[in-house]
Image (cartoon, rainbow, N blue to C red; front, side, top):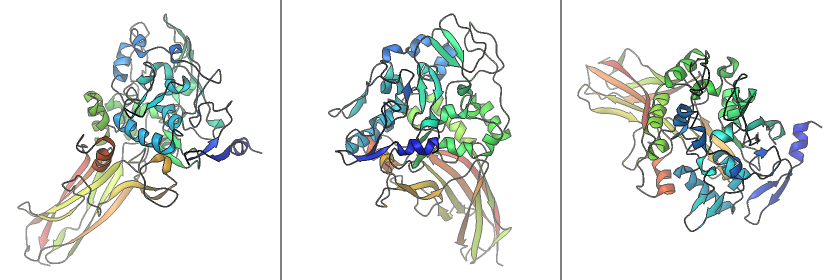
Length: 465
């Protein structure tokens, strides 16, 4: 029997008192189940065994300052995540606690320090563990355990940690006066990132978040461009790498005490989340996220040379994914919102046609082209709750270096017999809907911002025939 098949059969489906199905895992392999994170000792490791990031700052000030304010540093305190996690905690009576905690507070998970305060409605953990995805988590990772996962793929924090004096990283000749060092090839691979940027349902193994899988099936993977080449680089170099499919170099030092190197990875880990970083006061990270989004796609309009007065006019808008090594959008695509806002106006600015407008409540025109997945539960009901997702009812995304074309049609007003009409197409994005923000954070607590990723104009003349 193949190892992966044997692993799947080693799980037994049970139903908890909460009515939430869960697998009973072998404790020696996954002691923090349903998270697949583990320690070299095979069990509990108190957070006192890990260094506080503030200590790392002594020698790695620049890297610390890049990390501080990032979504990694805020992974545990992210208010949107906390609110969604709270709902999952209540609905599953704690069954998914470790599934979420394993990636958002890995040190708290292996230290068994994560608790839920039902009165305040928040999760708590130790001081060091509350600092999310931090230095002494990533740099005490020994290996990935993805070959032991039920899906035989990175995901659900499939990593093995060994806290102590040895810090692991991408340099074979590293020598530090503050701690021992060891080279780790894993830290140079996409599998390292994919261990948390892939997640699957612990019961059905259905892939809920698939950013790593999207990359693996892309031309980026074929060209050897890994996550670090785009997400651990200055923004300009990241844009260049994504567009050229050539590995960038960022010369510098990991520490003032260290040697000058051909390449130093930055630690902002910026993706597309400009909303939560701004909410938490990390404006630099928010602005960089906007720049990344604005570099990810391009638009074209395909229209005839003229529209005929009183007749049906047709045109097309194409979205091209030029700068993301994964799908657009990616990660929790049942929540993310990317859509086309298309307008046709006359020479006086009067709107002749519109698709994709936001209404007064921040809702997207339901007839718009919206790039997303529609997730449903086992009864076929639409859901945004990851723990309830059974499958995706529909999916519309733009693949890496791929394109998507939408068709539009409208009737040219008969009174327009000459002049020009302007077709405006804008690709817009927000991390989650206004309705979801109101539900999770309270109505009016935050107005979800929108960023325009790309825009294009096309003027078309109007003729009698």
